Image (cartoon, rainbow, N blue to C red; front, side):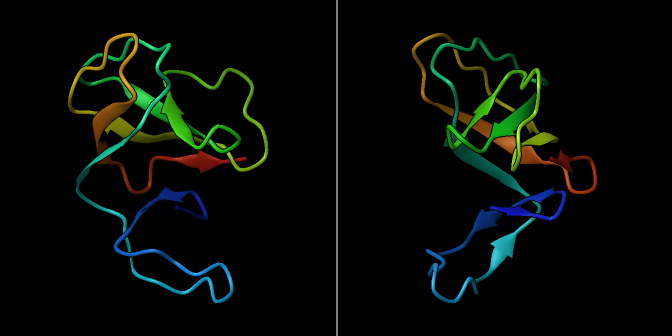
Length: 95
């Protein structure tokens, strides 16, 4: 969940009709990542809104993308679709 420039993780499903729910903006979570990327521990990742996954570098950010909002705390090789990240409140920027 992107809230302004923050990356957050919803505690439960948030209904599209209300848009109301609890969002965590701190902590570590397992999230979707691009299976073509090779991600190292400590690497800052970007949220690709159109693909609904974290990527190693957006390149040219599009509307809804968030850059620098999380850091990988586990490695993910090619073919892997999940990576563990730590949220970095205050570091992200959203297009």
